[in-house]
Image (tube, rainbow, N blue to C red; front, side, top):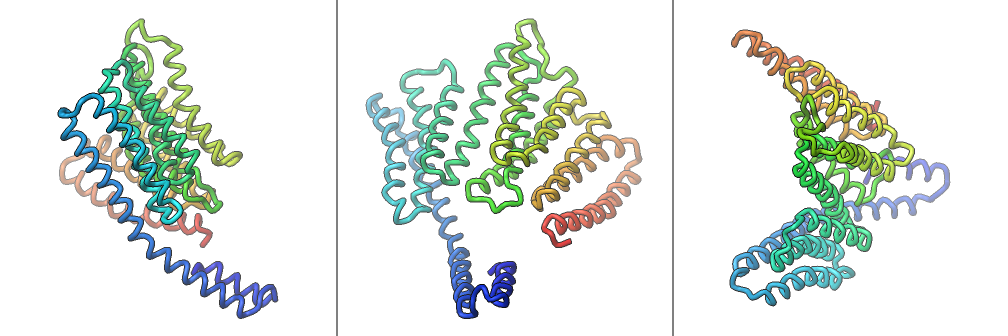
Length: 377
C-alpha cells in the first residue's frame, strides 16, 4: 500500500473522520488490490505476446498462400481479417477486458494490412501515403470508440506516419533539399509533446501510453534530428520547389506538436513553445551536429531545458532522459572537437577522466534533481 495513503489513514483516524475498524478495512482492501494488480502483469504480457503471434501467424499464412488465391478469395480474406478480430474482441470484452482490448488492437493492425492488400488486388498504386491515411483514420475512429490504450497508441503512431509519408512524397517530387529535416523536426517535437503530456496530476492509461511512446521515440528521433539539418536546410534545390510547400511543411511540423501539447496540458503547455523555437533554431539557423561548437551548446541547452521542465512538473523521467541527452552531447563534443586534437594516450586519459569525474558529477546532480522532482528535497 502506498505510504501517503497509510499516513492519511492515520491522520483521518486521529481527527475522527473515520474509526479504526474502517481504517483496517481500507488497508486490507488496498493490500488485496495491490496484490492482484501485481499478478496481472504476467497475464497482460501473455495476452500481448499471444496477440502478436496470432496476428503474425495469420499474416504469414496469408502471404504464403496469396499467389494461389483467386481475386475474389483474396478480397473475402481481406474483409475477414479486418472484421474477425474486432468481432472476437467485442465478444470477450465484458468477460475479459484485457483480451478484448488486445483483439481489437490486432484488428486495427489487420486493417492496415487489409488496406494495402486491397490496393494490391485492384492495382491501386498511385499514391501510397493514401493507404496510411485510411489506416490512420481507422485507428482514430477505433480510439474514439474504444478509448483504450492500444488504440490510442496506434492512432498516435499512424497519424504522424501518414503526414511524414505525405511530406516525403511531395518533397521528393519537388526536389527539396534536406526535406528530412522537416520530418525529423516535426517527429522529434511531437515525441516531446507525447512525453510531456503528463503533468503533476495522476495520468490515466491513455495518457501514460502517450508518455511511453514519446519516451521511447525521443532519443532516436533526437539523433535523427541532430544529423538531418544542413546549411541550406528546407530550401529548394531547383526552381520547381514552391516556397508555399516549404512554409506549409514547417508550419505543420511545428504547429501540430504544439496543438497536441495544448490539448493535453492547456495552460501548462507553454514550454512546448520554447521547444518549438529551439527546434526551429536548430534546423534553420544552427545546423547539424558536425564541427560547429554552437550546435553542441544548443543541444546542451535543450537537454537542460528538458531537465528543468521535469523538475517543474515533478516528472523524474524527464530528468533522466535530459541527463542522458546532456551526457551524449558532451561525449559527442569530446570525440569530434577534442579527441582528434590530442595524442592517443592523452585522448584516452582524457576520455577516462571524463567518464569518471564527469559521470560522477552528472549522476550526483541527476539524483538531486530527481529527489527534487519527487518532492523528497
